[in-house]
Image: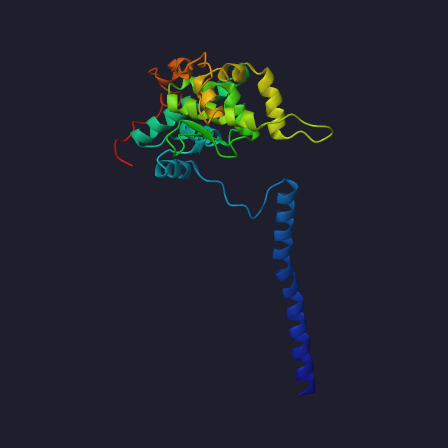
Length: 259
């Protein structure tokens, strides 16, 4: 019995010795993979990126509202691979793409490349409040100031959007104060300095919408504003021209249907 017991112990130890590498190998492999992902700056626990079909489905489910310029950019890229099958969704995408290009190309006269505009992930098109463009952050943060000063929204042909933006810009400018002493400049104080030298703010500050926003207690006794905001609102031809998008030329026919 002693010999048998000793033999069993030796056999068990041998099997355990053989099993240890089999147990450790997967752990080492997983650790190596995670280390490589970490070195490449990738989070192994991050959710997988959405497919183009998922992106189109999400946009359609949201009725193509409140999509950022960055999201529209991704959807436009997806359309070059496989556009959404429904005609209605394609029309929404075409419209939002044109709005995005209009906003981006208006920034300091820069290129119409949609990656150029600062804050493309914070600037949203067709937000739920009925306007054509707005920002996701605070109304006086840097993204908002960039949107206020670039002026593309004046060419959207939509008076309520222009009025809302001018009023917000006026209030932010009124709230802003100069930097004092050695204090670090705030976003508002920097924006105040920008608005003093920026042609867009000089122009907008002479409009009736700006005047109303900065005099909430009434305009009695004040001279009328020299510029009516409505006179600055135009419709860019890019928004209305009948144009075939680059991804439409080789795309299969769309399918009519509701949402």
